[in-house]
Image 1 (cartoon, rainbow, N blue to C red):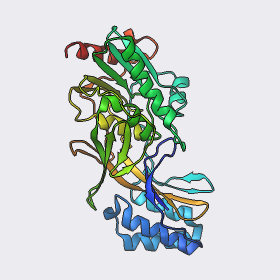
Image 2 (tube, helix red, strand yellow; image 1 turned 90 degrees about the vertical axis):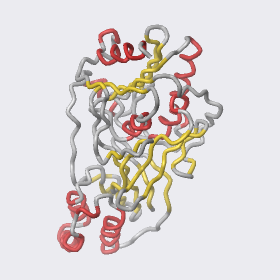
Image 3 (tube, helix red, strand yellow; image 1 turned 60 degrees about the vertical axis):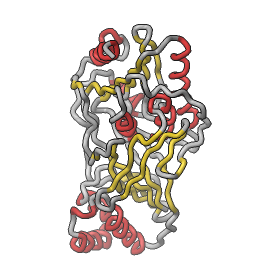
Image 4 (tube, rainbow, N blue to C red; image 1 turned 90 degrees about the horizontal axis):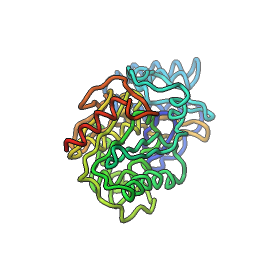
Length: 337
């Protein structure tokens, strides 16, 4: 089974097609090689005859996991992995982007685990502040989408909001769907980004339509957020950091090219890759990076950071916004719009 997804701290699933299951050790290594040859986004960067021969030797001598992680290393696939009995094994590795963001370890751990809640407040009486954490995939993420939308809606009833600050500095990833759906009022209807594979000209657009998210023609959400207000004309400042990763970067990219939008902070973690979910057997799952992210204007992020328009290192204060340099710069820009 193949399902296209994007992972970082947790797994979330995209629409896919059922391929069937392989059985036996030889069938498993055959499948790994097949999917690597045909779907890995970096497949043209290696000599497959040599790599396949090496993988078969490793498979015979020390098993499927070592053969697969060797392939991932050769492909420089830091987002891919092989799961055996629910245990992930990685090949290539990639650390966090350099960051001077200031946050205590307890709260950073909370946001990395996506256990934090959406937080909203007023800034200077007429600007909205919205902090969106990463969100764990579940069979029904409607509550998460509604929580974002509800915060936008509730602030709008309290004050005449002239602009928004969207804080993604602590968004480490998870499922993109509830985040994009909940932010539909600010994004508006239409294409907000895409998955792309330059080698095959594959492209699946991320589309917002009346509060629901579509990947290409496939409707990925059914959260019931119909009739959402269109706030896409309002100015938005997006705050990013080196901890903004994976589907957190999907959200950031969905605002790239949006009119009247400014990015402030540090460059993101550069996990801008979409990963497949391939069931090789009942207990073996293969994940391969199969595409990159692209923004609505067609700019491709090939495992590269989302960059800030206004680069600011450090100066973060999540407890006292008056001391938060990035938020104060955001307010200054919004007031000038």
